[in-house]
Image 1 (tube, rainbow, N blue to C red):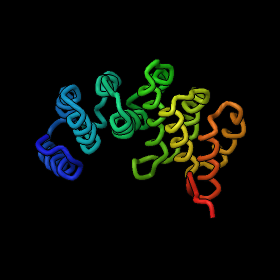
Image 2 (cartoon, one colour):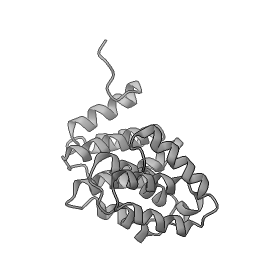
Image 3 (cartoon, one colour):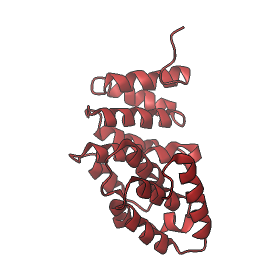
Image 4 (cartoon, rainbow, N blue to C red):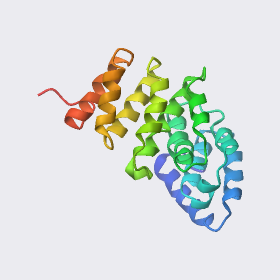
Length: 203
């Protein structure tokens, strides 16, 4: 990456997406797997290139997804990986649920966060989601007692996103797990359902 800031990053990524448009999905995946070990910007670049190459995103295999996530160790890396790679692969049937479930049991909190954030593409319209309460709540249920800040914030995000698609299912989940969920999750999700905002300003 020649200039490591967001505007130039996006310009470079769009140019490379244009150049790679005619490339096979497997070749783009191979390139991306090599890039992720080179640095943070290269990793993010690889994730975005994959997300914007239809053939590559559809050609992902479980072993590719796991390899592309190897080494994630920051908020931005995890969310980009889960939102652009793992979540869409899971949504489209290219990544089995058991793998996402396994991440929730990881000793590494970044992988636990990745599991939860991977539910967002199931429900976010802009990311191609149409709503999937069963799979979303299945993962959320596995981390209700997790108190790591990164996982708690991810759980709040996942439930708020699902609430846009299936509010009754989220209400039921909150009521059933109210004694297990972190106060932050209960507060932010209930605020979102009631006001449309996770942290409405006091009037």
